[in-house]
Amino acid sequence: MKIKINGKERAIDAHTLTIDGLFKIMNIENPQMVSVQLNGEFVDKLKFASTYLKESDGIDFLYFMGGGSGLRFITKILHTKFSKEDPHGSMHMPVYDNVAFEFKTAEELELAFAGRKPAHMYSRISNPTVEHFEQRIKAITDAVGVIALSSGMAAISNTILTIARAKDNIVTSKHLFGNTYSLFENTLGDWGLETRYADLTKPEKVSQLIDEKTKAIFFETITNPQLEVVDIKALSEIARRKNIPLIADTTMTPPYIFNAKKFGVDIEVISSTKWISGGATSVGGIIIDHGLYDWKKNEKLHNDAIKFGPFAFVSRLRREVYRNIGACMSAHNAYLQALGLETLPFRLDISCANTLKIAEFLKKAARVKSVNYPGLKGSSYYKTAFKQFNGKPGAVLTFDLASKKECFHFLNNLKLIRRATNLHDNRSLILHPGSTIFCEYDDALKDEMGVRDTLIRLAVGIEDYRDLIADIKQALEGL
Figure (cartoon, rainbow, N blue to C red):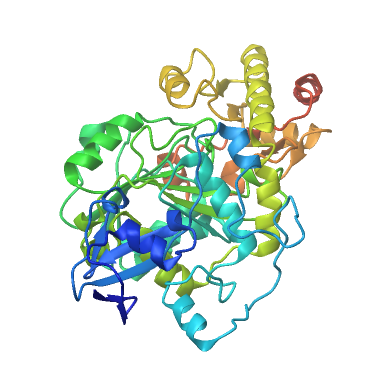
C-alpha cells in the first residue's frame, strides 16, 4: 500500500491498515500528543482504531501538548511526567534558559517547524521548561491545550486576537479589572474591536447584546474589586445557544477551587502571577482551552477546525498569534511557577480561611461602614459563590470607611499589612483602588465600575490571621 505520510509517499507492507496500526509501524513518539489529519481533515482519536487507510491516502501527524492522568489534584501536579526523560534523573524540570535548539539533520529541523516532530526550535515558540509547566496545568484541568504567556494581560489579549477580527465584538461587564477594561476599550478598541457592556447578573441583558459579529462572552469569576459573582451556568447556556465561546478570567478562583470545565467555560485566562506563582515570585499568564467549543462555529477558525478539530484554537494561537506577538513566558518564570503549583492548595486553603475571619471581624468594627466578601453568609453572592467555588470564594475582600481621607489615614497606620498592588502574594496586600489601579478613569466611569473613593481592597495572605486582625484593629483605632 502506498500512502502519503507528512507529505512524502511511503510504501507500507500491509493490505489493511488502521491509523492505530500506522502508529505502531511508524514508532510515533508520544502518541497521546498527536493530532491526525486524513486527507486534510481532522480524525478524532476515538476513531483511530476503526479508521482504515486506502491506497493514495494522505495522512499528516501534528504534535500538540500531552499530559493528564486519573490521579488527584496535588498528585497530578507532583507526578506530571517530563515529555522526555532527563539524562541526569532530575526530579524537577531543569531551567532551559536558552534560545535555540540544535537538530542533527536539516530534515528533522523541517519536520519540527511543520509541527510533525515533537521538538523545540526557538524559545519564543516553545521551551522544555515552559512546556512542563503547561503540562502540569493540563494535567489538573484535563484541558485540550494550555499555553503559558508572559502575563495575565498577555493571556487575555492573545485570546481575543486569536478568535476575533476588526469590526467584531465581545460582550462583557464594566465590572472588570482596570487594565482589562483599558485593553478592551482603548488598545483593542483602536484595533477595531467593539466591546459591549451588560449587567452579567441579568442573563437576559447579555443575550440582547449578542449578534452575528459577537465572538465571545468575557467575564471574571469574581470581579476585581467589586467582588461580583455571576451565575456561570446561566452565562454558559447563553453562549451555547448563541454559538459563541464563554471566556472566564479565573485569576481569583484558579483550578483547585473552581472546575471551569464543569461549569461550561470554554476558555480560561489566568494571571499566574497571583496564586500559581507561589507568592508573587514571577509574572506569568495562562490560557486554557477546555475543548468544549466547536471552533467550526467561529468564522476565523472554521478552516483550522476542519484540519485540527478541537485543537483549532491552540493551533492558531501557538503557530501564529502567540508566536508573532512574542508574549512568551520565560523559562526561569516557568520553573518558579511550576514550583508554586506544588503548594497551591495549601496556600489557598489558608488564605481563604483567613479572609473569612477578617471579614467577620470587620463586620463588627465600628469605623467600618460596609464589608464585601462573597464568603460572608449575608452576601447576595454567598450561595452562588459557595456552589461554584467549592466553598472557597477567594481571598480578597473590600470594605468602606467614611472618606478617601480616612482610607489613606487607615492605610498609613498599618504596620504589618503591606501597601502594594497585586493579589495572592503570600503576604497580605492592601490598597485604595480608586487612586491606584483605576486612577486613569474619571469619577463618572469609576461610579459605573463600582469603584468608590471610600473603598479599600485587601488581598489576604497566609500569615496568622490573629496578627492580621491585630494590625487592622490598631489601624482603625488610630483614626
